[in-house]
Image 1 (cartoon, rainbow, N blue to C red):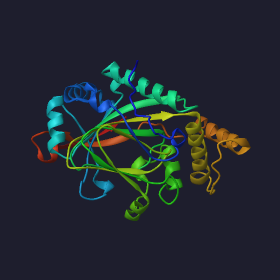
Image 2: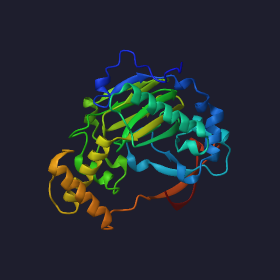
Image 3: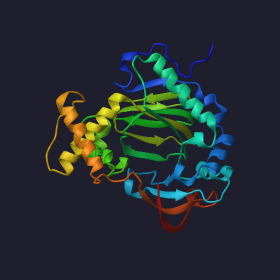
Image 4: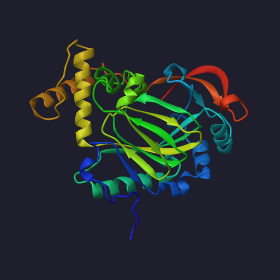
Length: 313
């Protein structure tokens, strides 16, 4: 009999994707997330499949976020720089390096589909996060459905309601239209009063409602975690509505409020989004980043400044 990945005992399935849920899992025991496997991923991931950031760890200052590169150092040295520095690694599409990550992703979503009635995904992806003690992920929202799986270390995860004032609708629309980064979502310290705060430990997973803003602060320890993202029919419909509302607001100057994902209004917005895409006005998904540091385990904060250059992905 196959062992379950997640602990479904006592979970109210009806709440899945409707409220924030913390669910147990056993993937913190997997060798796929040990240092040897992570070092190989860092060494073998192609440039378009990773991000490296450094930032101020003492304040919520988005302007201090910088983009870097691994360079020619070993995976082991990169992990040493993470342990001693202020670095946040995001390793995307790890299945291109090791097919076992793709098998794990399939197993996760097969298990969710077996427990959550009607849950079917049209897109799914897994990305691995390796980050330094006290590093932050600034306030943002994600467009697909998302879960965060803790493997090693611990972090404070602040999850906010997915409505105004926490979720600024015009900003969400800009993100959907590919005209703004996720961290452009406006944040005020007083929002924390409305957040649910989780001390996320190894063997726990968080899943929250669609587009719920969140931010993360690592505890004083190295963190290893991964995210899973997915699209369902209902999520795709909401994406189309937000995109059409963005066109109406930011291109035509209207103030749309309706977010229905069915009926005549929905299909009108579906048509508008399609026409906008075909018109050539929609921005391409490739984005430019200024890379201005290399990972260096012997440098302060684990980063060494280099001459800046633009990189597209």
